[in-house]
Amino acid sequence: MRRLLVLVVAVLVVLGFAVPAGAARPAKSQTIAVKLTPDGCPKPIKIKPGSVTFKVSNDGADNVSEFEVLQGGKIVGEVENIAPGLQRSFTLKLKAGEYVTYCPGGDTREKGELTVAAAVAKPATTTTTAPPSG
Amino acid sequence: MLPTFVIGLREGLEAALIVGIVAAFLRQREQTKAFRWMWIGVLGAVVLCAAGGIGLHLASEQLPQRQQEQLETIVGLVAVAMITWMIVWVHNHAATLKDDLQLRADVALIAGSGAALAFMAFLAVLREGLETAVFLVAAFDASTRPALTGTGAALGVLVAVILGYAIYKGGVKINLSKFFRITGVVLVFVAAGLLATALHTAHEAGWFNSLQEQALNLEWLVERGSVQSALITGMFGIQPEPTVGEVLVWVLYAVPMTIYVLRPAKPRVKATTPPSSPSLEPAV
Image: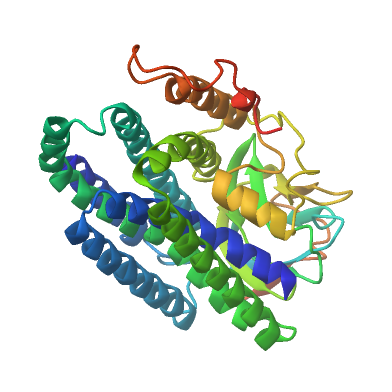
């Protein structure tokens, strides 16, 4: 039993704390503001491939507090516990393709679209910024 | 204030519940040494998590969510194994309480596992603590009314701690034989919930991606954002929209274990419980 626990701790330390937290982000990165509403996820998002920071905030949706990015049923990235007034960010490196945004509990838009394409005609929601400030 | 209170309560309960159960068990077993170690471990984990949460904030770093979910999955599975061991122990001893020889053999056995249980409490706090610390910091940093939002979150965690303490107190107050009879069934449901939660976090960790279709809609029971949902999800691991995989492992664990617990430990002990149990249906 003890040996098992020692092993578990070793695994935890490696997994939890030896994390390459945001190691060497590329200088050019996109930042997307994601607002959670009672409806759920934002309207379809279009971005370019590469590094993207999702700044997720909640403007007063009591029923939605989580934002996930999925592809083919797999969670690519997520943030949880975004209560009204709170904001949290996460950064992903996304390749071109179709993704799904998932906001559990949303009334009408529990799932939304996220398109990553090299040549986006009008990246309305996209802003290019310096390295994200968390 | 209420939304952050609910989240604080749920996150806090997931840790406080395991600590409360372990504390009551160690106390009932009169494992004072392990009991003291447990508290040192719990306090140490709290300090570690608080430092981690504040550190991440000061460094403007994001909580590595995937690794966090991986940690929750591993600790969750270890907790299931340990609670299962406690259930078996309790079950075997409900019948052989008066057997002195048996008890003496246990004391030797328990000396090692008491420390392991204390360590489990440490892991349980570590598992939820870092995420809770990050959430608390975010709440006090809210764009609108940060004082109120933060206070709500802190109150939620505080109530969770009080509930954990109440579980411990309640577990100690009731006499030994009742403790053995009652805890068995309750622990089965706690462990089944932990198992389903581990599958949930395993999906979020990127480890498990099958059987993700929604199996049930329990939003009527686990209404998002309600205090009730925080209690049910925090203590029994029941999600508003459980997936096929989550329901499957819940049933596969809960049904045989309930039968095991309700079955008399020895054939000659008279059965006081009817064989058919109302608790065989999944979370309805």
